[in-house]
Length: 152
Image (cartoon, rainbow, N blue to C red):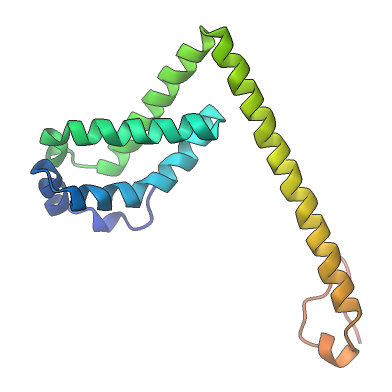
């Protein structure tokens, strides 16, 4: 989950157990983004994923008395996140109004994704046009357009 997991040492976990907010902030900052990405892949809602991340770290802080006893904090956090996401999905399956909200959010996320693809195509077109306007000497060293080979 985290690329720099070696930063969360048993000493940091011990400090969290003792109520050290700075140590907890280190844990939070190290895992929050990857945890959010993981959760959004399950619940398909940015807002729900954000709420779950906050809830998970709140529970970790409130239960910090035992956090130093966890051997693999990354695996533990990921398992808690998975369980929270599944609990949410089970709850959502029983709640019609929540299902409608989630469906709208999923549609908005799809729209955002489509917008990004359209913007990328626009940018690609602008870049290709700018490269075409360069002299052949200036084009030297630039990557050729996809599917084209620069034999000049």
